[in-house]
Amino acid sequence: MTLQPDEAEIEASRAPLLDHLVELRQRLIACAIALVIGFLFCFAFSKQIYIFLLQPFEVGASLLAAQKAPGVHHGPFDLLLTLTGFKAAPHAIEHLKLVFTAPLEFFFTKVKLAMFGAIVITFPILAWQLYRFVAPGLYRRERRAFLPFLIASPVLFAMGAALVYYLMLPFVLWFSLNQQIVDAGNVSVELLPKVSDYLSLVTTLLLAFGLCFQLPVVLALLGLAGLVSSKLLREGRRYAIVGVFVAAAILTPPDPISMISLALPICLLYEISIWCVALIELRRRKDDAARDLAAV
Image 1: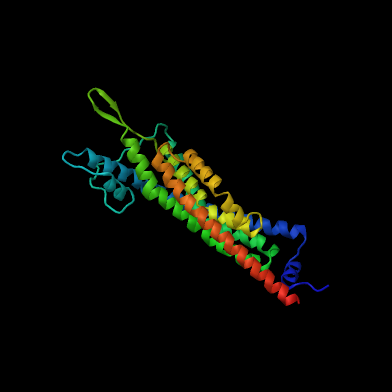
Image 2: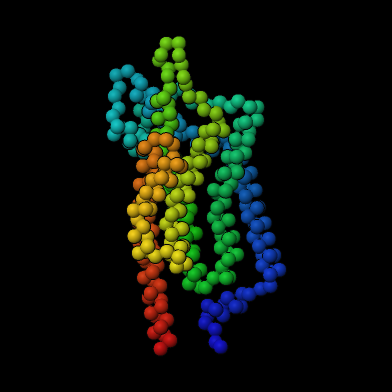
């Protein structure tokens, strides 16, 4: 029996179980080394990274300070332009104050920040090691189809993170600062966030948006495996939209603008996913037709 070229290539790459385990160990060691190097790098610059993450807080505080300034009026459109970065914050604040209440709290906060940063900056290496491990078991056309997802995944994650950093966080913090009571005589209720709580808020939102933005990658891979179809996705659109808004309500802070800011891009990405799966199905039909024609 004559093997097809793809099948022959996979057959040639067969190896005993022990060889696969040895290769897996090498891949895991490479991932661990990359994570350690990334952790050390991020920890060395943890102070600068944390200050960078405070920029949305500064934007929200600056906008609130401008709104409280006498004789200054800023409408909703000015607010939107400032929060989206198209307009500079109209009022500079003197200083931004966060606190920590345990002796080593900020140290462990920097450790968590370095771990999170290490995973983010080494993701291309981790994904490449995973791909190199599973690639020998894939057909050539499957390897060609898998590679674009390695590029699309970090790009989509970066888009979700950018939405959080430039829009969501400034609005959430501006909204939170608006809840303060600072002009009621002897009563004063001020926002003094802990450094650990602020980092938890930032990382939670970054992960939530970044992972939700992976929807086209997940659905396209399911379509590639034949588990979903474009027809199924179109028929389930209304249920998907409801699910997206429910997930957005759970993952975002309790305000409607935050929920809508996550839900609308995800709905758009769902529509893009339908087109991606449809293109995969079209290409599969063309490949099947060409294979049938060659077999005649």
